[in-house]
Image 1 (cartoon, rainbow, N blue to C red):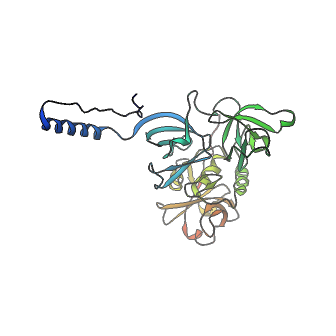
Image 2 (cartoon, helix red, strand yellow; image 1 turned 90 degrees about the horizontal axis):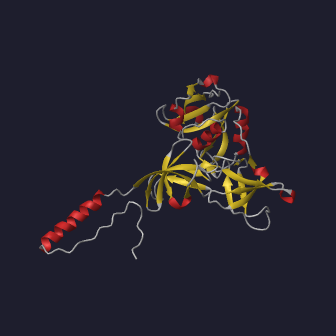
Image 3 (cartoon, one colour; image 1 turned 180 degrees about the vertical axis):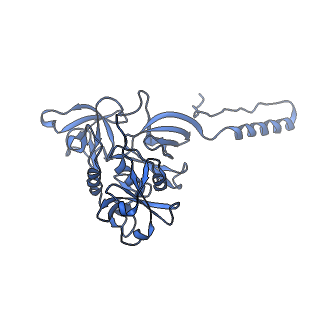
Length: 318
């Protein structure tokens, strides 16, 4: 019985010939050229959902490549290409592309994606444990998922289970989460509320490429804070500074919620943070200690490296 072959595989069989070894060599060369012409990456376009707490996205399909970003649990992504155990994906909110392990994803067979219809909740705690039953002592958590993860709700617990929700995970398995970890109708935050949110992450480890409460890098952190205000912003610091929805602001006219960009020059931005007032700003940085921390604009190296200040334009809602 023949083995099943991956999608896009071409099966070639060498045919016996009576025309001599020269013809056989020519046929072998022809087969070799055909194999060279077969693309190593199968082009695809479909929706998949992340089934691990955080999926690293790499610049190339191997773990020695640079981590460029992350996709968090239960987020829907577009599958762009497949290469063996690797999948090239694009995130929906910021359209960022990178390679991740194929086993971190599940195909969405119906609808527009996971948790896009029906009753859903969003994780409001910095981390939330998911259990197989509405009890925190009987078994260890099935998963620990990050802030902002979305889940489909099956039903609310009642009686002694009143503080729980039964949810359907992206792998279609039922599980339970505590109500206090989630919010059912998240609303865009005000600037003051986003600053309060930012301070909840103080001391959280810095992580290059990080985009979750398991660890943020500088632009992943500011992107999350602006997203909490209902605005999807580009992923990288230089992209954010050049974004068309940004308005340049003079340093003397900074207001809380403005974004600060640092680097050796305006066209060489390498770091960002959010201004919170009184000369202070909050950031994910490796400076001093690699954590989310509050810096002061008058301190070095920040006062020397500040090259741009921006204010996000408020979107007009009908």
